[in-house]
Structures are given as C-alpha cells and as structure tokens.
Length: 130
Length: 509
Ligand code: SF4
Ligand code: SF4
Image (tube, rainbow over all chains, first blue to last red):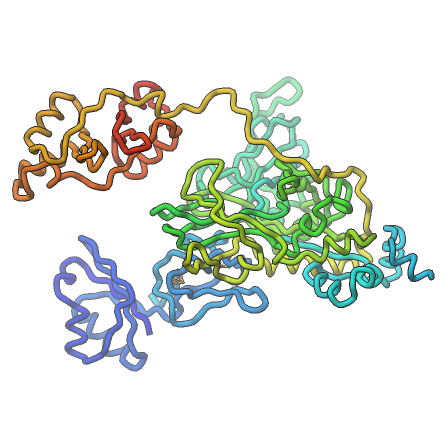
C-alpha cells in the first residue's frame, strides 16, 4: 500500500518517518522523498494490514497522509497505445503487450510524474484518495 | 494455362471485378512476409488481390480547409480564430485553413489547431471569431458564432506531408533532459524514441511508387480520402518519401484523428493513414513482403543542436520494436511515438472496406517520382556566428594567482567574468565578481583562484551559431561564455552585452 505523506516545515523538523517506525515497528519503504525549505513530501510503501496504524500515527505527528490506491492511472479513451511512456519511466512500469496494447506492472510506480508530461495524449494522471 | 497467365500479371480491372463480386482476397501488409514465404512470389500473386497498409502517428504537417458560408450582413474574414486558435484567413471571404500545429492564443501548447480538428470530428462545437476592415460589399467587421462540423459547407482535410516512409530514431548524448518532437529524451543516452509503422507503412510497401500516386483512394482519419501527389519534403531517393493527402472531415472518426502535445515542443495531430495496394504483379508482391527487419533507420543524437546531427548507428524497426537496443555496450530502452496497434487497426479497417466492396482500386493518375531528394533551405543571409559578435579583448587569470589579484583584474578589465587558465594555457575554470565577493566574506576556503573557481565552464566556439550560444546563456542562466578554440584556449568572450549592443536585444528574451 502506498501513502503520500506531506508535512509542513514545522513538522518536518521532527523525523516523522523514523518516529513512526520506532513507535509502530512497521517497516516503511521510502520510495521517493522531496523536501525543500517549506514543505516535504514522501512516498512510502507499507504492508497493507499496517495502513491504518501508520496513517493515524503520521496524522498525529502533524503530517497529511493520502492513500494512493491507484498509482498512475491511464485514461483508456485518450490513450492511443503509442508507447511514448514506456522508455522514460524509471521503474519500467509500462509495456506493450502481445497485441501492442499498453499495459502496466502493478506496484512498481513511485509517482515521479515523468510520464504525465511525456504522454502526448494527456492520458496519464495521478489519482488517489483525497 | 489461364491460371498461369493470370499469375504473371493481374489488371486493376480484374481486381476490381473480384472486389465487386465479393471474391477478392485481401490481407494486411504485416501478413505478406509469411504468405510469400509459404506460397512463393508467384503463389502469393495468384492468391492475394489487395494488401492494405496503415500508419498512425504524429503528422505535424496537417490541417483543413473550412468554408463557413456567408453571414448576414456578410463579412470578408481577414483574421479568423477557432477556439482562440488562429486559422489562415487570406483565402477569399469565408474560407480558412486551420493548421494542426498552430497554438491557441490563450492556452499555449495545451491546445491548438489539432485539437480544433479533433473536436470538430468528435461532434463538439467550436467558437468562430473573425475580424475584417469592412468593405462596400462586405460591410461587417466582426463576427462570433458557435459552429458544429455539420454547419460547415466544406471541411476538407488537406495534409501537405503525411505518412513518412520511415523516420530516424532519436537519442540524447547531452546531460540535459530534452523535450523534442521525438518526445522526451532522457540525458546520457537514457532512452531511444522512434516513430513509424515499419512493415505496415504504406510507402515502405511500395517504395518505387508503382501503385501509389495521385488519385489513389486511401483511408484518412477514419474516412475515405485520396492521395494528391508527393508530399512536401518528399525525399524517396534517401528513403524518406512522403505523401500529400486529402479527405472529407465529415466522414472521419475521432479514433483516427487525435490531437497531441509534445511537452515543451508543441501541438501536433496524430492521423491514421492507410493505402490499399492492388497486387498487380510480382513487383508488388516483392515490395509488400517487406518486414520490420528490412527497414533501416539511423539513430540520431538530438543532444547536438544542428541540422546535420550525427548518426550513432543504424538500426531496424525490428530492433526498435524489441524494446531495447545496444548502444556502445549498453542496453538502451526504446519507445515508439506512433501507435503500432492503431496502425494495424487502420490496415484492418481498410481491409474490411475492400472486402465489403466499399473501396475499389485505382491506378495513379499522377505518378510520383521515386528518386527525388529534398534539399535543405537556401539561406541567403548568413546565420550570425559567435565570431561576428564576440569580444576579443579578454582578461584572464592563472589558477595559482591570488584572489586579490583576480579582484584587481576584474576591476581593471571592467568585466564580471575571469576565465581561469591552467599550466598549458588552457581553460580550467571561471571566477565571477560574485565568487570573489563570497571569498572575501568567507576567506576560509583558501587564498588562490583555484580554491574558489568554478570548474565546470560552459563555453562556445567561434563558428557556433549565435542562437545556440544564446540558448546556453538562457539554459544555464549565465551572462557570459568564454569562446575557446580547438585546444581549449580562450580566444574571446561572449557576453549578454555583446548581443544586446549588436542586435538591439533581439536575441534576448
Ligand atoms: S504515452 Fe500516453 S497515449 Fe502513449 S501509450 Fe503511454 S499513456 Fe498511452
Ligand atoms: S509516475 Fe514515474 S514511476 Fe510512475 S509510471 Fe510514471 S514515470 Fe513511472
């Protein structure tokens, strides 16, 4: 299960992720982290059954947590199966199947967003539970 | 005996007779290699009557002539916009040409002529705005109205250059992410992009233009169309033939007319084009047996901003489609920009038309020259080179000199940039007024120039085009470039000031 954790500068001073690991004993896999002067954002992967406890803990520590249940999402009505997204994805999420139709490997996406701008047909977007 | 003579040659009339009778044997071009391998050339000629081809990819050189009909009171439209995208209005009073790559005045690369065309074909309404100076016969000065495709008298797609025979693949040697018409190119040969339907491509199945030519019926954007003749920049002598094509937009299908945006480059239109090839003789059998393996293209380095980009190696569509290509010992991933799946859908749709007798074959009424080679632009004005405007008065400093000395030289030379010279007189770094000020405030780093200089120096050469040098200044957000010779000796400086003075600021954004 992937969670997108956003924390403000103030909360960011505290090592939120480390704190949650310590308190819950859940192993958190940080897939991507972007921290600048005012805001921090981290994409983490955790075991599904630990989702609730990790979310609560993080929220208590002042972070906003968004559940990303869909990874990258393909709008089938816009996609033309060109494959322009295939070679630019660092996680090799996309591939063309035996019928040259675009398919994805579930669970690999780290939501770096590169494919969203690379798709000429605006078919890719980042969806998640708000 | 009858069968034998039929094998040597088949007339278009005979093929059409079979199509009308519902007896024609039609296959898609990707099936031909196997058919010829199994039946032999003569066998394939006897067996197959029509081979359908197809391609679906970005075809920037596309657009449509539109006729809006006359308003009351009438207007002679001089400037015309469709959903804020300007169309060319310099043709009579109520005609316009909407070009696919024209961008919206308000939405930039997110919306353009291609989107207007796709929306018309999808049945959505488009806002027409037009202006005129007003004349005695056409008094009206402005108009604004909502139009559907069905409201137009004519909407004729007319694409000056479509269906490229093949297209060179692209990669990027530079250390920057590039956004090109060949899509996103990752730095340091991070990926390879390509375009084209290979074995299904119309011209690759008839590279000598024996059955493709002006007047031949085609599939265009899901509707019926026709080849006009050779396309602009037609260069079949080098393997890059193109076609000019036309078709009625009113019969088109949005599945085969799709607007797209190449991020950082602009708007383009993906168009489906397919041509049915009558199998009239062994020549057509042979040319339609072409496989992805047989169609070669070069891999070009888009990291080098010149018309004559170097080719890194040759490859084939088979290799490109495999997903990875070896480039100097590394496996590099490939991506297509055109859709093979939809190219196949074009060929299949075309096959169904022929099988159902909805499209008959026709010989070209206007042959296309299979040997032409397109020329580059004839430029009468020489493009300005760095040489023309660089400042030959250059003040430098040695890397072992004191920072104090650098400060003095900056002051005396009235410059903000000091190229730093190493032992062999070659460029090794650069210091700016800012670096020196920092060193004064924080002297802990050392007292010599080498301790504070920037070692990564962006340079230019005397024969580089000024536009390219300006791109470097903008990209790295710097205000001066040392001009170096082949041995990396600094021979001049190019600063934003040189540009400003000489060209009245035209080069700077
Ligand atoms: S780049 Fe976009 S249109 Fe092309 S295959 Fe990927 S998602 Fe589909
Ligand atoms: S967001 Fe990044 S990791 Fe996810 S599919 Fe797109 S390119 Fe791949």
